[in-house]
Image 1 (cartoon, rainbow, N blue to C red):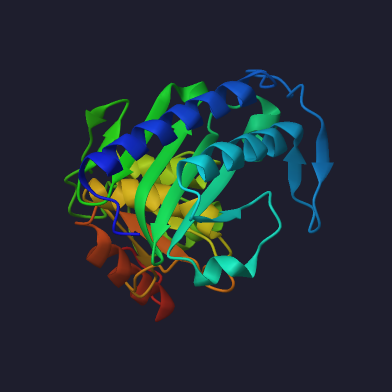
Image 2: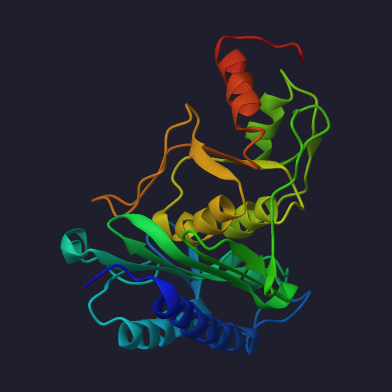
Length: 275
C-alpha cells in the first residue's frame, strides 16, 4: 500500500475521530464525575487496574479500526501482544482509557488514544478526553488541533517560571537546579503531552516504563504543534519495537528542550543549587 496522504488521510482521520468519540461515549456510560465508576474492576498481572470500560472500548475500537485499514496490525494495552505487528508497515496503537485510575475515581483527566504508525512513525493521532470536552487530532505534516482549532505550543524560552508537569519525584529533583512552576498532577500521560501541545503548560517529565500506547498519539499531536518528545539525552522516541516500553523521557514546547536537557545534565553531575 502507498503512503496515506491527501484526502485519504483526512478522511481516515475523520473516521477514526468518529470512532474515538463513540468509544468515549461508551466509557462515559460507566463514568461517574466525582465518584467511583459504575464499571466492574479487575487487577491485571502486576497489579494495575482495568475496568470493563477499558475492555469494552478496546473491543469496539479493534472492530472499527480494523475495518478502516485491514492491513494494519494491532497494539493495545488491553490486548495480548502479537509479534506479527513487527513485520507490518502499518500498526494501530491504542490505549482505550489512558488514565484508568482517574476514570475509576471520577476525575476528568482520562482519554481514548489512537495512533496509526507507518514504519514505526506516528502519522495519525487522536487523543479524545470526553470528560474534559477536548479532542486533540493530528496528521503528520498537517498540524494539530483541539476541537477543530489549530494549536501551537507556548513560546516560553526559559525554565525559570515555566509550567512543568510530571511525577513528583522527578519534579523535586529538577527543583534542585531550576526554579519553575510545578503543575498539579495530570494522571493521563497523553493529556500531559497534549496540554504542552496546546500551550496550557510548557514542559513535562515522564518516568521510565511508559508504553507505546501511552505516547504515540499524543507524541504526534505535540510534534505537529511545534513541541518535542525525547529521551533525557535528546534522542528520538521509536515505536513498534519488540518491547514497546521506554525509558525516562522529557517533553517540551520545543524551545525548552535544550534548557531542560542542560538542567538534567547539571542534576546528573550533582549540582544542587538553582541556576
